[in-house]
Image 1: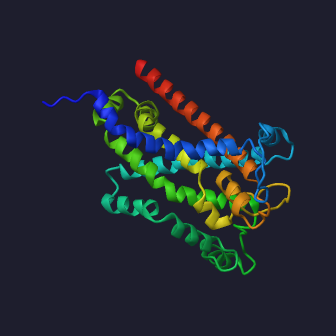
Image 2: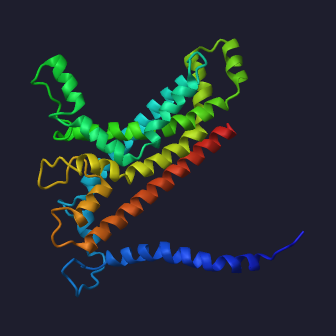
Image 3: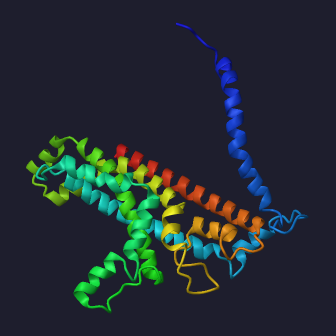
Length: 308
C-alpha cells in the first residue's frame, strides 16, 4: 500500500487552505477594522476612532441594537417552538400505520420545503392582502363586506404573518428529521413498556422523546441560526414594516432586514458604513456565543443522558 507523509499531504492542501483563509478571513478583518473608523458614504478621509462606535451602539439610550435583537430573538423562539410542535405532530401522524396513503402525504408534505422561498413568499403576501387577498375575501363571504384582517399593516399581525410563512416553509425539514428518527426506534422498547403498564403518554415522554433528542437538537440549532439570519422571506412580505414609530425600526425589522435597510433602504442617505460594520460585528459575536452555548449545552445534556 502506498504511504504518503503528512507533510506531503499538507503541502498539496496548503494552496487551498490559503485561498479559503483569504476569502473567509479578509472580509471579517476588514469589517472589524471598518467598525473602528468613522467611515460614511461621503467621508473619504475617515480616520481611526477606536471603540467609539461600540460605545454608541451598546450604551446609547436610542440605540436600535436591543430593539432589533429582542425582536429577532422573539421571532426565533416563536418559530422554533412551532417548528418542533408542527414537525413532531406531522411526523407522528405519518409514522402511524393506520394512516392510509402515506407515500402520497409524505410527498405533499415536502412541497413547501422544496418550493423556492421567493415564490412562496409572494404567494403568501397575496393571501394576506387586505383588499383582495383570499383570506379576507373568504371572511367577507361569511362575516359581511366589512370584514378584513390587516395582516400587513398591524404590527402584531404582521409579525404573526411572517411567523406563519416561516413555519409553513420549514416544518417539513423537522418532519423529515423526526420521522427518520422515529422509524429508527426499535418497536420492542415500546412493546415492553406497554406490557409493563405504561400508557401512550408515558411511553412518549419517557421513551420516544429522549430517543428523538439526538436528532432534534442539531436540527433545532441549525434552524435557529438560519431563522436568526432570515432575510428574503420577511423582506418579500413586509419589507421590515409596518413602521408605527419613527424612533424605532419596523415591527418585522429583524437583524438582516435592519442592516439591509440601513445600507440600501430608501431612507439611507449618508450611509454610515462604520456603524453598520459595528452592528454586524456585534451581532456576529452574539450569535456565535449563543450558538456555542447551545451546542455545549446540548452536548452536556446528551452526555449526561448517556451516562445516566
